[in-house]
Structure formats: C-alpha cells, structure tokens
Image 1 (spheres, rainbow, N blue to C red):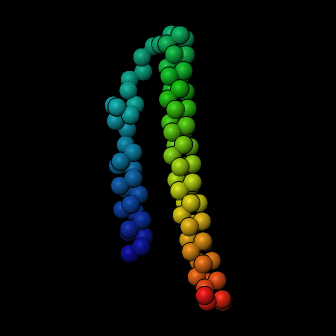
Image 2 (cartoon, rainbow, N blue to C red):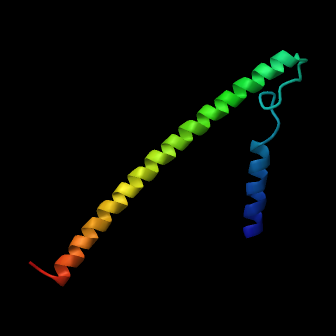
Image 3 (cartoon, rainbow, N blue to C red):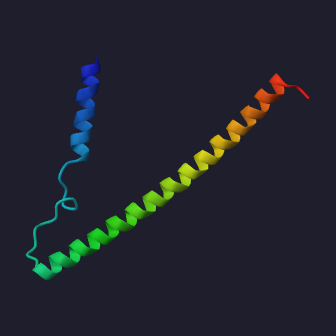
Length: 86
C-alpha cells in the first residue's frame, strides 16, 4: 500500500513538472548583449529576493528571541515566587 502511495506521488510530481511551452520556450537566437542584459536582470532579481528573504527571516528571528526572553522572564519570576514567596 505504501508503495502504491509513493508511485502515485511520483506520478503526480512528474505530471506537474512536465515540459510546457512556458517552462521551455522555443530557443531564439540572442546576441551577447541580450544574454548579458538578461543575466544582469536575473541576478538583480535574485539578489533582491535574497535580501527580502533575509530581512524577513531576521525580523522573525528577532520576534522569536523577544518572545522567548519574555517567557524566560515570566518563568524566572514564577520560580522565584515559589522559592521565596513574598
């Protein structure tokens, strides 16, 4: 049964990754300048996406650290109250 599931999943992946005209457009002759411009644009886009992802990850990490610090402070207060009630 597990093998049938894996075979079905593999078939779905292969179908989803099948070649389409959008995924593989017909090759058109390009000049070196056009290729360089496209490469520059692709590089710029990749750098911007990487920067945005890094910025988002940093914000999420800072939020997680802040949340953990608040939880640790609360746990410390509770522990102190249990050991030395006021």
